[in-house]
Amino acid sequence: MMSGRFAQFMELLAMALIVLGIVSLCQPWWFGAYSNGFRWLVWGWLGMNIWSHRKPVRPAVAEGNPQVTIDGHPPIEVSYTPTTKDA
Image: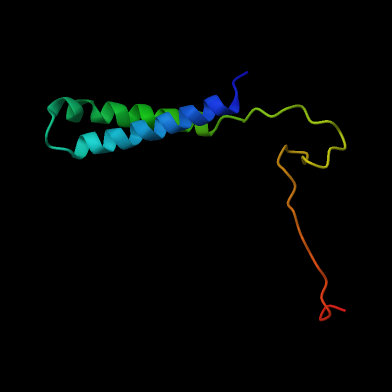
């Protein structure tokens, strides 16, 4: 199994490829970057689709653990302090 840090790194790499592709297609100075810009843009888009839709790796959850809900997300914290107006 792959770690979450690796997936985050791959998402950042995909975003960097997307930005590099867009900048390369818009710049007029270097034809080599312009000719590869669309390729970088497509690879970044594909990488982003793959890595952002991957199910994250989560540790096994013991039953009754209040720190994690059934779907693996942390519970929503609600803090409420009654005031004299509420009474």
